Image (cartoon, rainbow, N blue to C red):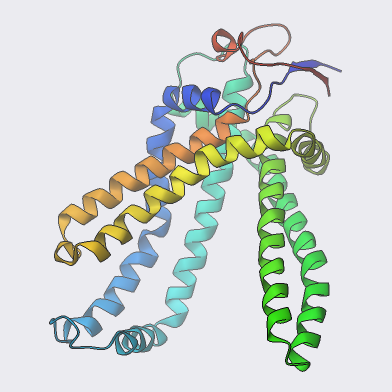
Length: 308
């Protein structure tokens, strides 16, 4: 039985800790690119030659024809491309689990010193399997929530389609999309809380930690949702920068300026993901009565004593 000081999720605390972990932010950025690079290179290899022969004048080729040419180009190497995408997603998932586990272990450690990358990822390797189970638990919870929402909506949409009730069909589809989005956010918030609970020495069950995280997310919905929005909205905005610039300024094309902007946008997105995860860290890094790396900034944070 141990005592933890676990305040409300705080974007300010996430900002401070993410700045301190700048080496990790760069590693997250590089790791994300390494995971998707094979798929991007393969896609470029099969799509670019097909588009190179098209007339370059504005409006000379209908947009629908361009889409058909791209689909036809992708059909040939569909299996290698699918393998590259799936393997990239698996690598990205494994890397995300690793750095999450490492950040938790380093932050909750009483003698946490400088945020060296090796000191972050080393404990993450030791705890990787526990956090992989937590990730699997979250996926199962999301699947169950999706099934609970989708089955009755599917039944209702089928009846609406058979009755030619278009308005009711649209309402049901919109309700299903909104319900699944809400369920995904709740599962995400529960997993963020559970990640820090799973780092406690006496916590070994990923399922129990996730259920405890779900309880915390439901007890503190506004604080949890606010911390989530503060980081997710900027991440989505920076992700849209390059596509919007490419549409607004066609002269940029695929030139170096757009590539540099894309790299900077992805670096900002990596900082947002690190800040989001760190926002759910405990208000203090107390383990066994000693202060961890957040102790100096925790005095002004609202705290409650939780007996885990």
